[in-house]
Length: 402
Ligand code: CTP
Image (cartoon, rainbow, N blue to C red; front, side, top):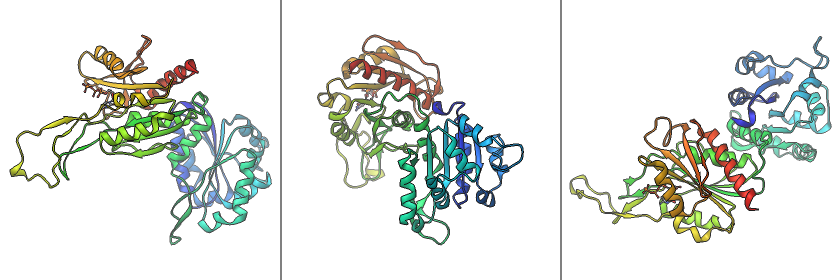
C-alpha cells in the first residue's frame, strides 16, 4: 500500500492481553510494505515471544535500553522512524508517556523522535474510564500524539463488555496509513463515494442484483479518507469490510441509493459513483412469496432511476463527478457516450470481458477518460493502487477549479 512502501514504522508493544493482536498488526504493516521495528516492554515479553515478531517482520526485535553494545539504539530508532505506533498501550505505559519518562527503550524512543506518534490504548473498561487514565490520554494528545479510542466490545475472559478493547489491526493500520500519507491534497474536501450493488425485490424472498463486490468503491473511500477528505460511503451489500474513517450509509435499492446521494450531494466537492445500481426492478413486487408452480414465465420489469442523471441538478457548482462504465463491447465509445449523457468530468471504463478486471477481482485495468479529452491507460493493478490513481485525477481537477 502506497503510504507504507519502504517506510520505517516502530511498533511498540506493551504488556496487556491485547498483545496477541499486535502480531497480526506487525504482519499487516509488513505486508503493506513497511519496514517494522518492534520494541517490546518487559511485560510484553511475558505475554508473547520476541521470536514471533521476528518471524513476521523479518527483523530482530529492538534490544533493551541497557543492553551492552546498543547504547544509542533509541536515538537511531527514533531518527529512522517515519511513524511510531504503540499498540497495545497499557494504562501504565500511558502514565509513563504522559510523564515524559525515558527509562526503557519505548519511552526513550518516544522522547527522542520527531515522527508522528499513534497510540492505541487497550485495558479494562474501569481502568480506561478512570480519571487518571483519561488525564494521561489527554496529556499525550496535547503534545500532538494521536490516541485512538478503544473499542466497545468483549474484554478479557469474564470481564464482560465495555470500552477498552484494542481496535482491530486493520483499523489501526488505516490510521497509521493516514498519518504516513504524503498526498494530503483532499484535506478539507467532502467526497461521496458509492460502492457495491443495489437489490430490487421480486417478492419478499427473491431479488434482482449484479456481481459487484464493492471492492473498487471501498478502496476509493479508504484512500480518500487517508488523503484527508471527509468521506461519505453510500453502499449496497459489500463483499469486503467497511473502510475506516468514512461515514457509511447502507442502502438496499437503487431508489434508496439515489435518495442518499441526493441528500449528500449539495455539500459535496466530489462524487465518485463506483456503485453498480440495479437498472431494473419488477413492475409488480409481490407481497407474498411467488409459489414455484404459480410463477409467471415472464417477469415484467421497469427501469430504475439513473442516479447520476436524476441528481444532476443537485451538484454544487464546481463539484467533480467521476462515473464508471462496465462494458463488454466498444468500451471507450460507449464510455464516452455515458460521460456526455450523465454530465461527468471523468469516466472510468472497464472491459468486463478482461480477466483480472471489473467485478469481483482484487485487480482492475481501466481507461480513464476526461471531459477535457484526456485519456489515461494505467496498467493492470490492485484496486487499492488504482484508487490512488483515480484520486490523483480528482484532486488535480478540484485544484484546477478552486
Ligand atoms: N449509474 C447510475 N444509476 C443507475 C445505473 C448506473 O448512476 N441506475 C451509474 C454507475 O454508478 C456508473 C455509471 O452510471 O458510474 C455507468 O453505469 P453503467 O452500468 O456502466 O451504465 P448504465 O447507465 O447502466 O448503462 P448500460 O447498462 O446501458 O451500459
